[in-house]
Image 1 (tube, one colour):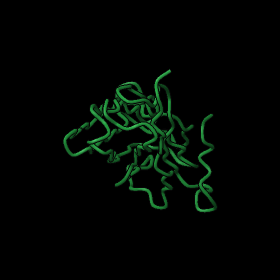
Image 2 (cartoon, rainbow, N blue to C red; image 1 turned 90 degrees about the horizontal axis):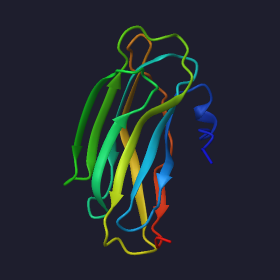
Image 3 (cartoon, rainbow, N blue to C red; image 1 turned 180 degrees about the vertical axis):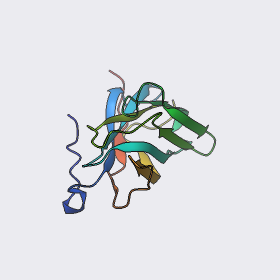
Length: 157
């Protein structure tokens, strides 16, 4: 079930960025996909930037690909650093940004849990250093960031 992107009274009318588990098992050695979703509030969005933090001891692979929110061929910066467990990701819409945008996927994060992560461990994916630009390419203030995604590692069936 998708989160409602309602993170309290400060999120009313504000752009909200949050993580949602898309697919995959949360088991040692298994890969999973996590969507980065944006509800833009009452404005158009011309760009999004964030830094993803994961524990390099818990994740072996890290990849991020663009979602559909900023058009079919957005400008992209994708700088993963698997050794540090950090990835910088930025997207910008090519061409004009509409005044109103329906929310949706900004990106999909692909990670693979390390094979030696103990069962019962909680692993965390968190976004930080978020910048969202409105339809005039101005940095938005009051952006609401959803909580980190915490997942319990279980045995594969």
